[in-house]
Image (cartoon, rainbow, N blue to C red):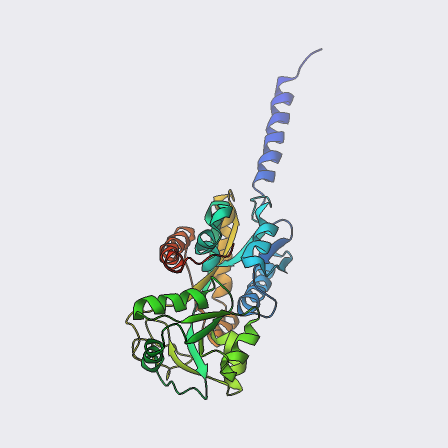
Length: 325
C-alpha cells in the first residue's frame, strides 16, 4: 500500500485546526447557572437577577439563577462544589461565607476559598444601627451608656449566628467594652418587626432588608457603621459621629465564585462582563436604591479582602466561643 505523504500531512493539519478551533470556542457555548445562598426577593438575589439578565444578553445564552438558601450557606455550596470548573456553574456568596464559615464550623475542616476561587465582585453594603421609633436612644452614645449600665441585659437581634449583624455587634462590644445579649432570628422580616415593636432593643440593618419597617415608621436609624455617611441617608451620622467607637466599619461584600480550577481566560472573561453589567445605568440606579457600593475587584483583591475579614472573625469567634456545630 502506497502512502501519499502530502495528503497525510494535510489531513493531520486539518484535524489539528478543528481541535484548536474547538478548544478556542468562546465562553459560553451553553447556558450558565448561578447558584445563590440568598433567598428570593432579598437584595443580593435582586441584584444577581439583574446582572444575570445583562450577562444573558451579552453572551446570547440563558443565565439561570438558582436559589439555595439555608444551612449557613452550605446548601448552595454543596449544589455548586461538585460542578466542573469550566465557568458554567457559578456561586454567589458573601464575605461571611468566605471568611466566617471556617471558624464557625471548625470540625468540618471546610475552607471556602480552598474549594472555590473568586471570579467577580458584585457589591459591598454598609449596615445601619436600627432602633424602634419609640426607643429613648437617639445616638450611639445612648445605646452604649445603656449597655454599660446593664451588662448582658441589652438585647440585639440579627439574622442568624455568624451573620454580619451578629459579628458586627460583637465588634461593637469589643470596641466599646460592653456586653449585650444576642437574639438570632430565622426570618429577616420577623427581625425588624421585633425591633420595631421593642421586643429586641436594636439591630444592624441593611437598607433593602429593613426599608419596609423603616418606611412604615417602625424603625429609626441612629447611625451608619461606616467610615462616611451614605448618600441615601445623609442625615444619619456615622457611629463615630454619634458617640460610638471611632472607625467601626460593619459591612458585607458579595461576590461570584467558581469551583477551583476554572481557566484563567474564562474567569477573566466573566469578570470583565460582570463589570460591564455593573456599569449599566439601570444597574447603578438599582444599587443606589439599596445603598450597595459597586466593586471592581479582581480575583486577588477579593481573596485579600476575605483574608482580612477572616482574621477579624477568628478573633471574634474565639472571644465568645461562637459555633454553629
